[in-house]
Length: 164
Image (cartoon, rainbow, N blue to C red; front, side, top):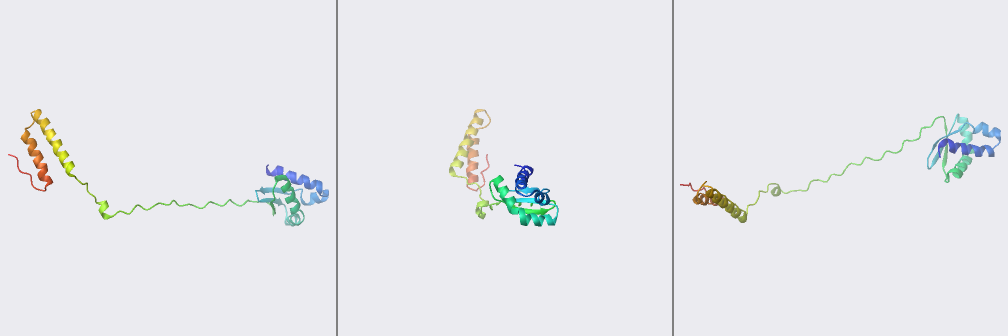
């Protein structure tokens, strides 16, 4: 229900209840300017009207609004225009960033580990490549043996023997 229809219903009921001169003097030019679940704000033209409506008619207005809306409200009378309060701004929630996991200095400088199986697999691959090259006429079996000997020597941290 909009403000104008709600207020016209309230005024219609009060007009039937109050003497005409009283209704015309104090309430006819009033206006419902704000309505929420807790408060109804009624605007009047002067401070004298505000004082009279607050003391004489606020309870009657609250009763009429309760009958129309189905729940009780607080009635506030204001002079002139009314600016409803701004809704509260939600708090700013800063994202929580987890710190990176702690790493030991050993973990940051880990070198790849070469196992004996890896060395043997490299030897076998080189021997296969040498045999393939030998089949194509690109080398001899002794070249392949020299290549694997070179890897073994490097693995043992020694200088490879020069090939003849």
